[in-house]
Length: 300
Image (cartoon, rainbow, N blue to C red; front, top):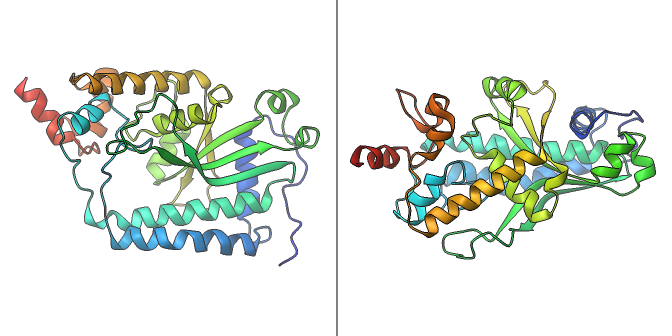
């Protein structure tokens, strides 16, 4: 084992977001990253990287990371029984890079994190009690990118304000690799009202509720895959936003359970801003059910 004593130096940060960003930045340095941790995490990434570029399998079930951005997705998937549109065949390298950067980020954070914190990565989580129990249509467990807990509050107060340590003893972090445009958009977004076409907030909300930490809020951490010298950009998602998402998802499932079409719910919520994700008004669209959704509306 290599000798390693290059954890983040003592410095107090105003909140979890800036603390985690500093830990990531410090750990990403070739002077600080732990070679053994790099080897562990990148070895763990290999199977996912290989699968990303050699086999595309579309999701057959609703999971926290799929089909939750819009209420109509759950209706189309489980009531209309329409399969999601296939992803492009050449999307594999994008997913492969995502897996690589996730695991490299885990290695960096684990290298630089002070000992008074505990870091868990790719942590398996059982989904909340309200999550549907139909195993053929819904995943029954998921994986959290990173969950950081305070082990020694007295020591942790050297890095975070006393009030933060006392009130937020755990922090859930979800990493997202982004192109430069999305990274800049992520930096400016007001997540209390932002258009969440990829279901990032929904995913955080489900996992936060499953772990009983909705009241702590969570971090959505952007990695700029176009410029890897850019810092990690964790954005804090407030408890009110997570709780709102939980209630919205429950309502989506209620509509599907009753066989009721909620209509183009995402468009109703966000108006013309949703066109980029829904594929309306000449936009490409990213929704896996965009063609069927437009067909439902034209038939109505």
